[in-house]
Length: 368
Ligand code: AMP
Image (cartoon, rainbow, N blue to C red):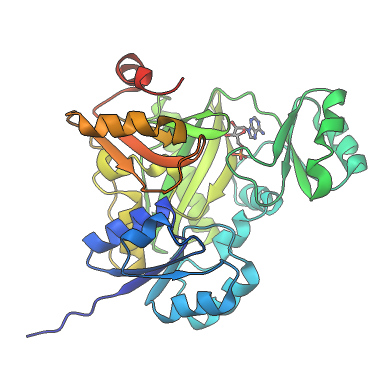
């Protein structure tokens, strides 16, 4: 009898992304250990082992690495100095580089530009004086964002006139970036996974946000095929040029036939959740295949798909849907113990559904 070697994937972060990585790791025969500061982190219910600790606790991070054959992250703000030190000793397969490049909006946009992705015009601003200078050059409307720790529309303000400059003062307590406002037609994103040679890309999704949070992802993105191909090709090339490995999601603005890089995340992305049922392989599975040294699979779309994010205010509606019989409607509830409006509690994937059909048939089930 031959004894099989079971690999363990360590995951920094135990939120819903961690949970879905754990699900796919299991299907591939791997064990998982997760680290998260919350005792009731969603992934803890399913992973093999867990560590309750802060993301900046060096001993706990090291313990996670020690217990793992390979380590990944679903949390973007792990302190760099800790991760760099660990990277020298342990197999943090994606490395710190893509995380480092994405942790600061200024660095992120400079990096995108240097590697051939067009971005909105931008400038670093640190105080009222540099803000005035940047606004004079970029013009109204423009968007002021904190350079670090912003997410889902937090830490940013659209400036439309002089009067808004006063209001913006609060954000300037920390270093910021001022961006040209792009009156985009829509937003779209691409998730890619690379093993250093091959880069696989998931079909482009069109993203609809509500109050800064992703609400719907519609696939295929309703846009000219040539533009869709350009977005995928640029993403693939960007990943190669940057030498990134593992998973990367890029959010773009689309205006006419121009595409602009908005931001990136070197982890599975909310706009890729639809891939679990809507594609032949999914973003969590391909990340795990990369981590486990398996060859990557190029994903194909199963059918047009719509993903609806379930925030606290929609949880009851999602649970009701789950109790009903609807073929090709897949309800995911993350099992978070506290539900709040605007908190991501789950998502629903409608396979074999266009954006129009969703609007006509399902949109009314959720809070408007
Ligand atoms: P972000 O956190 O940078 O993704 O920004 C959150 C949302 O704000 C985006 O999804 C856009 O809808 C909007 N936004 C951010 N930056 C810009 C920009 N430069 N021009 C227009 N809208 C923007």
